Length: 176
Image (cartoon, rainbow, N blue to C red; front, side, top):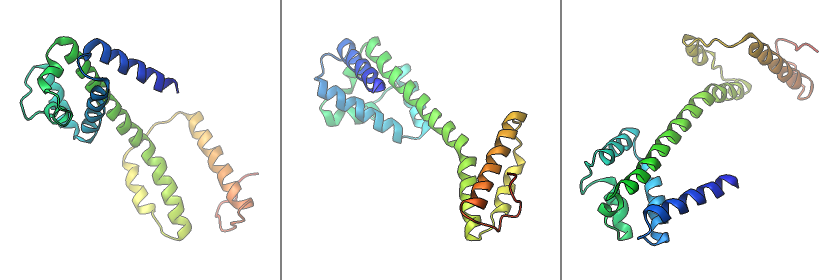
């Protein structure tokens, strides 16, 4: 809720200060089209667009022209002064940072997803230890207290499967 309020405030302030000559619905369409276009582009093209906008190298085939044309806008009026250009650069910068955040989040959660899928496959009888052993190349040093917490969590997990679900084929009986 608070993020929506902040987003609305930033959006309205940006429109009021920089793009007042546009109708608010046109600015909303421009803002949404720019977000969608920049999220679907490869990261290299987003950096190239950022660089072109920074150094005034935009051409008639630029992304800004593709975004502004369906709305009936001239793309040159969207970056004709420094305030408008700064507003667009700020938006592109935040999209780049957000895309990097999503990538890092996916990379951090990837081992946990692999562990869950390997557990599900092991229940079905498919052995994936050969695949998971490929990750032994990357060593990760974690603090000892984190390691103990993982062991306690693993032990509780085994205990739940052993007692609640009554899977007695667990090779190591959990400590009670």
